[in-house]
Amino acid sequence: MKTNTLVKLAAIIAVGLIALATTVCAQVSVPTTGGSDGGSSSTSLIPVGNNNNNGATDTSATPFIVTNLAAITDHVELVSEVFKSVNGILVSFSASASAQSYQPSYFFAYTNKVKTLEDIMGMVTNSYVSLPVVSTNAPISISVLFYDSSNESLVRGYVSPPSGQSFPSVLFQGYNGGVLQMNQWGQWTLPDWAEQVQMRLSGNIFVQMTNVVTAHLVYTNSSGQWMSMDLPVNYLQGFTFPPDWAGQGIIVLGTYRFVGNNIYYDQHAYDLGNGAAEVPITYVLVRALLEGSDDFSSFVDSTNMSVQLWTYQDGTGMTFGKVPLIMATFTRATTAFVSVYDQMGNYATSFIVEDEATGVRTTVNVPSGSEGVNVTLPKGVYHILPEGMNLKPYWMYSYYYGGKG
Image (tube, rainbow, N blue to C red):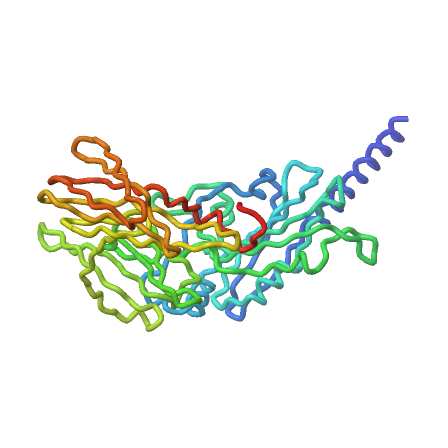
């Protein structure tokens, strides 16, 4: 009896081990590749974490660092330089209807001296993950990140970097995903297009400069219009640069120059489209000259304050425009003619004259049949408000003459 029980127990354990091995094999594929220089690559699948970070802790990755302006004078050169620093690949999968609390991901160390996208594709493409889901109608997403580190623990944030160092940088990133479909063998998979991940430069580039305090990028858009933007600066360490602007625009750097106990501020401009050649900064003198508008007209010691309005009519005879405020300044007592009229021959019928020193208001009527009126005002500042123009605001105008708005 005991013998039969032991035999049955051993059989159950064997079946369990076979099932466990089948599950692991369905999830893990460990390809081996090597560059012509004898470099090494490795992979591991670690199904830990939660639904938000695909098995990796937030590592606050820093931008890729370059040490001179030449690296940002050409986009292709920048891509080439950054790609040479790829040392690790993290591939993550996320199922919206996952039947488990973690989302699997796997990591490849890729330390070949000679690096190619084909090498990386060979590793990633040959690695499959089996995801348990409770609905085949829910989407699955894919994330691929290229890092500048082959240390998986650092990349995933399981350990902290040495003192004074940052977490690994994400150099390239790509994403895709879609809804499942059943293939010809009855397996649920993503369509090919949903698994195709295009890798692009990630985030920004950090240009290391030990004395920079300001960074400003000036460029032209597709219409030839000049535009500009400030770039984030780490004080006396460098600035962050958007990689898509490599080789485009003029970068203006403000730097500190330390001479003895003195600090001098310098500003230089470099043309990124011309090998970072320095270009001159020209200082120009400008000023703002203010004048009247359709909101107000200003007069000083004027004896004729006549204002013509820009107005127009629609098909119903309604007149549209603005009645301006008249500002009058007199350094002595003055008699002035005041008139406000539009292009259709309509005139203001009266004026409210407000003394700005006292706030006292006086209404002056325009004689019947006259275009304006003479007013005698002592020294002072006055606001003159025309009345009787009966103009409608511009926003009420309609090209359709069916109504009055």
